[in-house]
Length: 331
Image (cartoon, rainbow, N blue to C red):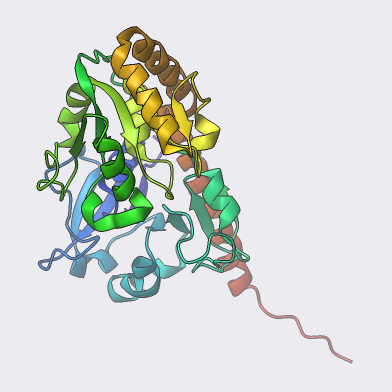
């Protein structure tokens, strides 16, 4: 029987971790009494399987792993030196970069500069914009579980799904949300949205909750392809959003969604969807077909398995070079 890979990482992005855990490998995550970022354990939000395993941070260095998966600068610059052993830090290593560069869109150097490490981006846009230094890098686009075509669209409103939108400002389009909401009925859900929205809806309940809305609106200006967008597409929920970052490669305007950089045009498209439920169903079904081809969970897991193999090969070559005796020329 083939040995299951043992991956160590931190709980940074719960939805991503949930979909990653659909693979045939075990994922170990640290816990601490302080519950600081990355150390919260499994939590109660996601229905993780038995292959997501909590480990008290003081016990991490005593376990065997096949790969270390970093997800933040904190993980890479600080955490690994606090909880991993020297031997564990020589294991195959992957840095999963969730975001595009923030400080400058084209002149930002990534924190990792290591020819023996693998840098994984979640979109081709992110890979294009980051200066990846000497680090081998590849793209693994999102994968989400297919819960079936469940769109109904009977609620004549749009739905927005963004955690902590009021505090995340322009990058996540809080101003755009407010502008559109003056003309279009919108509901907002997510952590930290209780004062202006409906608050958090637990992930297992999201499909049934979202499918009743007429359309999904993504006001985010500049971030990665949102997992919430992929999930909406997989439900057959028509998506309206900005034609920025990776969104412009996923949607064909008026075919499988509505995208534009003109907010007035987006509002016009929303009005069409509110007035014509049949149109919304057609657009949503086309979006679902795109999602089943591009964001299916089987492709996602297969590409991660390949990434773990690549990281292992790179680590093997590095360790082999370290063990090789130096050869000196004699006269």
